[in-house]
Length: 368
Ligand code: ADP
Ligand code: MN
Ligand code: MN
Ligand code: MN
Image (cartoon, rainbow, N blue to C red; front, side):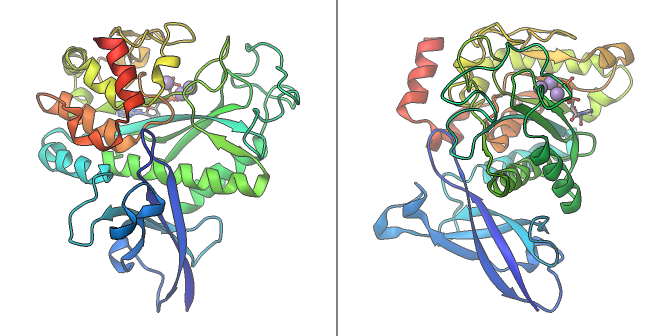
């Protein structure tokens, strides 16, 4: 039987990597049961900001295979890590860095991650938000759009519904969706209870890819800019919900406060990997805390870390890191949180491949 396998990987564009994919026809007896049954492949790294022309061959190593919800079974989607031909993980392979942290802390801390991915829909050319007045006009001021209903309040429902169904078909850990505060902005939640860092992060990347590809079918462009429209319009984040076994136990609130204190000590290091141009979003307005401040509190949406009211009441549960921008690499964010909370310190140097001069300048301007 011949099936189509879509090999998906993360490129080396700085400071924000893009997703890439290509199709391989596989001749198989059965549908591959896991990524171990899918052959390795390769690509031209000189066309993805990952190599030079004279040494352009890079390897794709399958790490997660799921049914393809767009082409339908028996076709599959295959998420890959990028390697050098000599067997070393490529410098842009942030999942390999996360794997090292998980080796250290998975057993001891049993961490769970849940992401709230916000994103903005644009017209098919990606120029202006979907169904905003043509030629650069603005819709009514925000206020009625969040969790709104009706064709004048929410734009793009047809894509959102198709995306949710696709993720369910593919067996991804989607937990919910909602229309956001800015018109044409939406959110889906993925991961959560029982989702390890690699599950939540792999599923987030795959969910993004499915959203982009479905958008092609609907003539809608999806973007993850942290601050798509300047002015009185909410930015787009990727709140990261996190818990360890000790936070989930009775009186886990103590462990949650301890984690907040540790996170406070490495605020700057976390901001390094919490998304490019996040300074445009974390201004102190629009339900954010200024990027140079670190605050935590219960039920407060102007904080860096929010402890949900239900968690405070039960004295156990999880914390919500509100700092990550919509354009984060979840592998980097999970690594940062694991190293700071389960370990002793986080050093963003492991991800230096992605710090371009613009990002360094933003960090210097903010913290020096
Ligand atoms: P809000 O918009 O109020 O911040 P959401 O409902 O959008 O909250 O997102 C909360 C996320 O937290 C959900 O996706 C859920 O799966 C996740 N979550 C719940 N419990 C835990 C936990 N113990 N550990 C990690 N994530 C969790
Ligand atoms: Mn949410
Ligand atoms: Mn939200
Ligand atoms: Mn949230």
